[in-house]
Length: 239
Image (tube, rainbow, N blue to C red; front, side, top):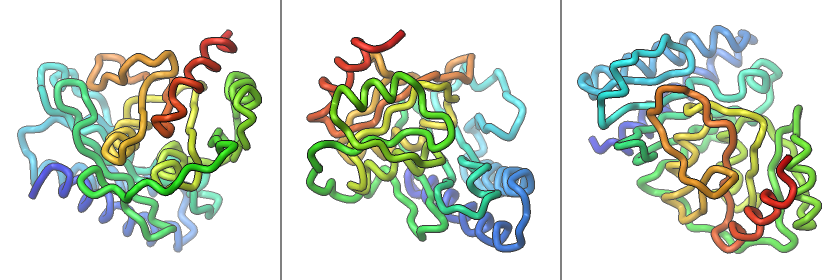
């Protein structure tokens, strides 16, 4: 099985488990724990030589000497999961030499798993653009950029759900400046890049994974034709 195919199978299996847990009115802590165990078991069986960086497991510094590292978020959007919403996701990605090389994002409540080996064709963009922001803590920078672009803002939960909304043509821009970790955006970035979208830090620099610190504070995923305009607005308004 290819790396992308494995990511797809693992994300899909974890999504099915999480749907069962959510149907039992379980809290997000159980979902995080059980999905993490399933993901680690499947990856270790299929790729025993690859280290894994997971939000729900202790970090293993040995990953820093490996070219290949799986980066996973077993349940992205724990709050939304616990509230019974659909805007949560499962992230499974492989970084090779610091780049998001393969990945899958499952949106279990929607019955969708998007993967870097078969992304959907991009739908026509809408003008003025639609911009996805955090539904609970949108940043002042996002508000200023959306105003500068005359963009409609749409609040949504999980980072994966927001990024996949751009992939699916339900929005044109996903901008986040409020702090993230590698597992929050590695799989979404792998899928977004495969779909032909722009993905970078909000200063335009590349996203680099398998770094010692797990933090990647910000991300921009958007239509390529909008990237220069968004980055210009960010540079103008960033405090």
